Image (spheres, rainbow, N blue to C red):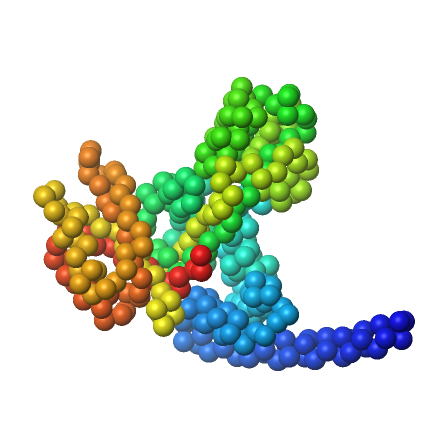
Length: 358
């Protein structure tokens, strides 16, 4: 047996040498691409190219490596390539170990610089001012719906959505003491809402305290007697707060959608893999919403999401957020938007980007 193991391990060592050599050859190609991009002053991070690479490697994968593992490996390879092309800075809702931080790591890998921000508004500001290249923000959750803070900021920002990601969210109760001694629970409002029924059953008398992020709640709970926090397990490990209960979210398939903001728009991923986000206001007249949707219906453009929010410009005035399959540059989308602009006082393009797999 020892001889057989030694032989197989020798084969693995030889393969590792080949893999490292090929990785460095690939990264040298990425460096050359980076030189060309800098010379032409074009985008370093190209979301549509990333999506194309991930689809292509998944198509040639014959196993036993699982698709999710292969994609994770390639994200890190592309993260290392980005770092060689140009050091990138990504702003996220901090402190370290929030769900937004985890989403940013999953999208950009571990080779870029990450900057924690105190609020979602600060993420927008950092990218707008050029203090960060990209920003990661949550926009909706499968249990609790939209993240209002994010949507409201899209009304005035010049930034564009360049990519999106769907991430399963597992909530953990973190506390230093026993459940019976918990008097306060700190977390982000969305996290508290996603665990509402569990909290009512198990901690009905605890005070729920909304803070700016899940990880901030852990930092507070770590210093306060009788306090707990709802956050990812990673946050407990990062700030030294033990796990008191796991899987406390009310719904099993609890998923959040994150978008990534940049100062330049993404190109088309092609083959029907794009999504376009729009902000629209309507005239106050009967049938205004129906008339606004007809340009998409006539061109068989699928509307995947519609949501209204107060415009904050005057009382009872609303704007609508739309997600539509297709890219801004597609002829059918251009025709639909041209018609829409004639019907609506405001049509704002928020970005087109590769659609995330659900």
